View 1: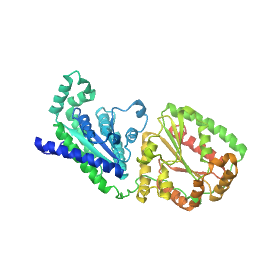
View 2: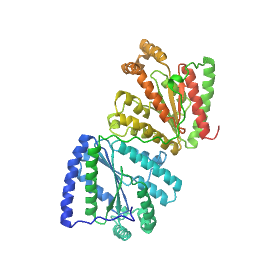
View 3: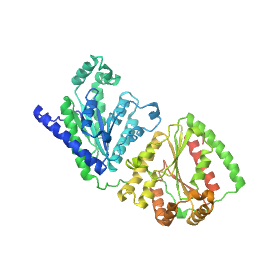
View 4: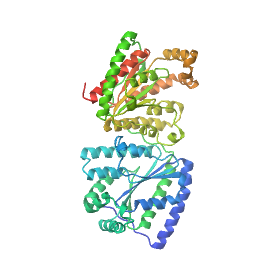
Length: 491
């Protein structure tokens, strides 16, 4: 894209100033429409060192109410961020609906920098490109406007600017080691940048090459393209998104009604197995930490199926410093205003740690689907988005274990009545539980579809038959131990 880029003709000074004023006023007017329509806008500024990304951002945000934007300078990942998936720090900075986020460099600089420093081979580069394309597509599919700008200057211009900054002790600090290296290896950088731009230039999130030789001209290009992008996004906000065909290998799973629920376990056997398995899981947790392998356990299931007790037996074997349980309820306002996976990306464990989710991202295709909290297009699209999310986790190196805790309708009624009639358990039963029970058939159909479409070979579903809670607890422990032994090479 850079090699074949045809620069626009820069307007004369008088026209440039007039168009700048018009574009500033236009953006000021559009920000209120963005707020009213709940459009989140993510603006990525990439480009050569000393090309003027930061100063352009500074000029643009003057035309936006400061309550409705954030600016983040994405320097090299911190040690904490390096222990999370590659996309974590970018997902964490997504704007709320009706607001802007401006990123001064981002995933392009991180990927191309790793390529140039020989930290990323061809296979790793290809994997990162696929991650980025999925990330950007998921954002646009879920109503985000993603605007990507690359600030381009020629080799002589970059050297001139860097020399100017270095000649003044008050500005020399602005020149990084990366900027110096870029200037010395301009042609090599050009080749890597050009390849990346071509690989990630898609219609839903295209690249805009900014001629950055003149700062006012660069500002005008960004403002006019930003305004144009916002106008198009506002017009298209209510359009449905085409569904992608699943490309991930799936495991064949039984339907819920085909699963026998007569599994039981005697108390004596249960206690013996529990002690033995918890001891083994504790040993594996130590190795998990030493080898920096993250573990994610996702629990879904019927109300009163025994998720809480099951989780308790898992955590009872773990070092409390190395795990966290996330009880997932209805999203808070700031969570609801972002991509539905945002609140799960931001709760992922560090390498070597364990995250247990009591209810999960699958709410999108169950409760949100049944209760009408999202559109049909949203939940139909979510199966593929969830498979992509879990693929990112597995490619990162995580062990992902998903449990559906299963009981029949009669068992649920018995447990509801027991809770209702036992004062110390009454807090566990709510009016919502009874309302959900009335929709059992609808939920069962949704769960069957969910399991069939998201039981991938890399993150399959495990059904825990829980009419006997003791049996379900032991089965869960055995599955977790088996999967950890497999990843740690001890099976």
